[in-house]
Image (cartoon, rainbow, N blue to C red):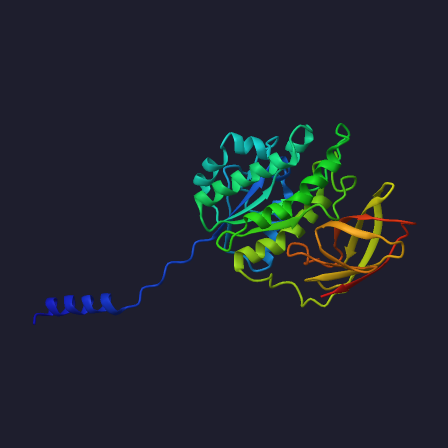
Length: 341
């Protein structure tokens, strides 16, 4: 065998047996979808990107046909926020499929509904129908889409006296809507952006967040996004050994009924992964309906446990649930306790 032929054989053998390096996995593509609260400056996106990087989630790519935001924190500025857009408008005009095909996200963070509610003419059911259409379009683009939907932040602009209550009604309906549409292959996760957010202090006009509001939004998105990326709970949070307290208030009352709200506070240095509130009534009160908690009643004792989307409460943060009840005699406040789980 000639030297030239021998060299050719050796080269062929090396080509066959040398292990080739595997291609690097593509970054997880995440689309922030919304209106001006997402668009500009939309600094919750910057804060979320920064925290994900610091938490070890570096192989990600924020995507969208829009860019920028003007935030001081370095971040991937791609997004799908459109000022003035509504959920019903995006759905009716079939705008989402084009955005999806241009960016092909694997995870969508959706905060939509503010502009639908502002005018006061679009009902909650119509907004949920638009959400449903948008979810279908997401799954048509990617059958394995992970969808994270916000219970939107409070809205109390000076020119809209009914906005605050319309937001409450929409947010109360979102968990049930999501539960009916979620699938194992394409889960829908609900993130409570409303609880603990103050339209008076966390926005500059009753609608659009300032820095404190953006920070709260980022903090609420983070656990759900981290879980969607990695399939596990965020690695940066310490073991769940926090403690909680609960505050009770009546938000409305009529001749034989009332509406109540309980706020769960995590005043400890450790995150909560779950909580249970126990309320003992003394005035014959009966709970007839509840939201943002699983509520049972035995005699005078009402037990409320977190649902999947609001069990995680960061140190210093709060969450809340509400209920409707009946009363007779006197509607005296209950004794309320909270236990972390």
